[in-house]
Image 1 (spheres, chains in turn cyan, green):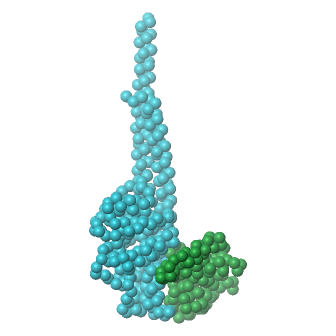
Image 2 (cartoon, chains in turn green, purple):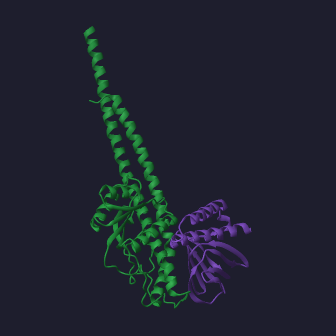
Image 3 (cartoon, helix red, strand yellow):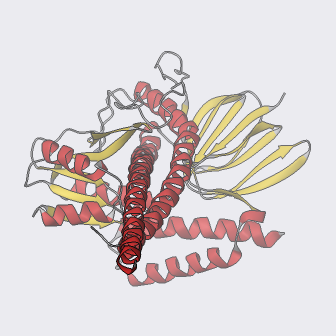
Length: 298
Length: 134
C-alpha cells in the first residue's frame, strides 16, 4: 500500500493540473466567442462584395481574367490552416486526415500555424511556405498570404488551389473541410460558399442576380474594377476561413480542457478516498499495537 | 433627403448612418455624392473621405478598396478607415519610412512589389496629412 505522503503529494499535483486546465478552458471559451463575433462582423463586407461581383458578372459577358481561367496542367496547391498550439483534442489529427484524403503527395503545401508546418515537413511533403497568423486574426496578416498564393498560382505552375481548414459547426462539432479557392469559377462568384460557417444560424443573405441587378456604371471600366475586386475577394475568402479555423480551435480546446478538468477532479476524488483508507488503516494499526503492548504489560 | 453611408472593412462595420453628402477619393479623382446619384462602382484610392452630418464635416483616412453608389446609398469597402483621433502618428511614420527604404532597395523591374509599396506609402501619407491638419 502506498504511503500517506506519496498520496498527499499526488493529490496536490493533480489539483494544480486541474486548476490549469480549468483556466485554459475559460480562456478558450472567451477567445471562441471573440472569433465568432469577428466572423459575424465581417459579414457586411462579404455581402457587399458579393453584390458587386454578381453585377460585374452581368456586365462583363465573357469575363476573362487569369484568376478565372481553368488550367489543364500542373499540380495542386494546398493551404493548410492548422493551429499554433496543441492541447485541442483531435482537431489537428482530423484536419491532417482530411488533407491526406484531399491531396496527392506531390502537391505543394502552404501552412498557417506551427502544427501544420511541422506535420507537412515531417511527412515529407513539399512545404512551399509557412505563415504566422496572430490570434485574434488581423486582416493585415492575411493580405501577404493571399498575395503569395495568387503569385504562386499565376507563375508557379499550379493548376488549382485548395484551402484545408476546420469548419466551425457548433461548440462541440468542428468538421475539416477542403475548399477550392482558385481558379475562381465565374459561375460560383458571388454565390453562397459551400460550407456553413461561424454564426451559421444567422440569416445568410442569398444574393440572387435578379434582386441585385442594378446596372451599375463601372469606372473606369468593368474590367478594371474586376481587377481590384478579385484580389479583395480572395483576401476576404481566406480571412473568413482563418476565422473559421480559429473559432474551431478555441472551441475544440475548450471541450478538451473541460474533459481534462473533469478527469482531474475525478482523480482527486479517487485519490482522496484512497488516502482516507490508508489513514484509517494506519490508525487501526497503531491502536492494535497499543492494545497489544498493554496486554503484554499486564 | 439624406444618403445612407456604410463604411465596412473585412474586420467590422466602421460607420453606418444617414449623412447629407459624401466625398470619396475615387481612382478617377474626387467623387462627390449627393442623393439620387447614378448607380456606380469604382475603385477607391488611398486618401481622405469626407462626409457631412448635421452640417458638420468629418474626415476619415481610407485605404484601397471599392465604392458602390446606388440611388441614395453609398457603400465603401476598404481595408482601412480611421478618423484623426485613432491615427498614431509615430506608427504611421515608421511604416512610411520602412516602405520608402524598401522601395529604394528593390530592383526596378519588380513592378508588382513596387506598386504594393507605393500603396502603403499613399495610405500612410493620407493618414499623416489628415492628422497634421488638426
